[in-house]
Image (cartoon, rainbow, N blue to C red):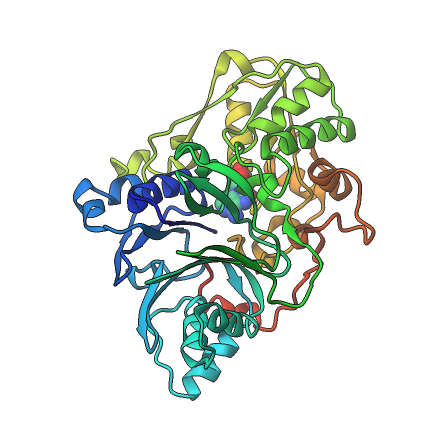
Length: 464
Ligand code: AMP
């Protein structure tokens, strides 16, 4: 779970990157970094924390130069350290290079072991670092050639922006699992994980980077190539369900449209007699609007979200500890009291939050609580860049819908079917029935084999 941004040939490259990262903050809140290039050298600024807190005017002023890449990071298992912030920047035989990665390399442990046996010394515990080591060993004469050679060895998901003194390269893995969009701002090429980053900087959205496409940007312009073997398209469907911002347009569909359609289909598949439809804000809001429109029941804000919950909260004293979800959400009693409530959320992971939320809605006087989820049961872990817990911790991994319903304390529970979810995103099914999406977290059908056993994966190497 990360966001990446890149700009080439802009008078205010680092400021533009700062703003772009701000729009991608939802993709990672633990750390952030910008690396700026002025043609001679790369200057890096990497910190733990949120974009708006980390980048002061002084820090940005030091990042002078027309080219920049940036990253926001949500570390997966065990990797929340400054050494694991990106962009990852190194000096090697060909000069300086920096790389920002969204995705997860499933064979990184194997590659790292092989590289270490051959003498490589790693600086971080990020999977991304193997790409840099493989590039350093390549004998290809160009940056694009070295990167291509390295990427042909890795397996998994990657959207990357890579910056050298003279070039910016944007590349997306052959299945296009994680998103990457291309735009233009005042004559400069810009790249971002989601198109909403372009809106803030008033860049024009040009198109999505195609799966397996590599774009090299330098003083002579933009060159596109497809250096990898063709693979079936497998965009991550969970980006549309939960992860991407609702104002993003990813590989065609607008995320808000998709979520509303999911809500409509959810109401068709799981109707119930009710008085009011509410959402778990913000994640369930758009699907709840669709559910309400289709069911004819009024949509109201029955849960109010505090936007001021910081990362660490000092709980005042023992007797009133464990606020948990109450810190973030509070019911609006007049909306709920005495009503038959439909509460819509995008997904259930462990079930613990949902259980607390339903407890809260009941405590606010609801007569009935019917939970509706705008995706299928999350049964399998993601190995391609979404931070889901291990299979065993996923409540739907080894519990039926009825058991989950009892655990969360709802009167009824309905999940959207896999077919309806895929139709909501893509329309008609593709020839192979996949619709061109990775739905492994729901179906268990992993489009890329997972060579590293999960137990090892959560050990020393972390995804991006
Ligand atoms: P729970 O009931 O504890 O499983 O929490 C469900 C909530 O977690 C939903 O509101 C989802 O929006 C949210 N959620 C879904 N996937 C993730 C994820 N990978 N990381 C953090 N939160 C998530």
